[in-house]
Length: 198
Image 1 (cartoon, rainbow, N blue to C red):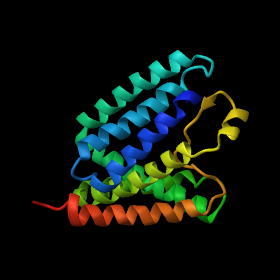
Image 2: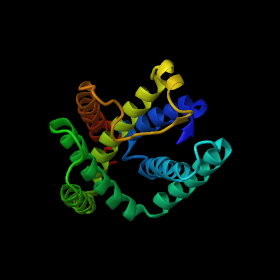
Image 3: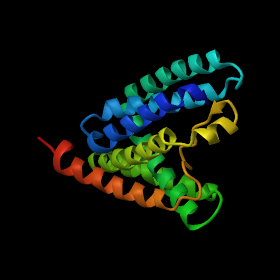
């Protein structure tokens, strides 16, 4: 959670961090881990503060973000396994949301997360490229939608902006298609240019 006045800067950081991850994620993997660790830490820490405590939410977001960034950057191999597990969970959620309504079964999320973690460790280079391309594409879309959101909707809502990274645009069928297309483009760019072996 963040105050609405911080929504546009946070959305722009999400979009730019997503672009960096999507198109240069393998080359800058430790930086990408830091960005995603910061986002995750900021989301978790700021959600523990009361919505009326603006200063507390901002401080918690910064402190939690720094802790998350340091944690993922120093835990490189754990970070790779977590990226694979996160990609597996993301695939289950997006696929299930697109095919059916509601949340996927917990067992499917667990199985795909474990499979993603194992695959990430065995095929590090390719999994890192695919995970950063698709994760970055999703982050770009979430950030772009948040940056372009309607101000009247925001004015009618609570005074707090809550990031919903798994469902950025309910009811908009173009989002998964755009995500897949952008992820494939990012994968191709990384395989052909930015992630190529020297």
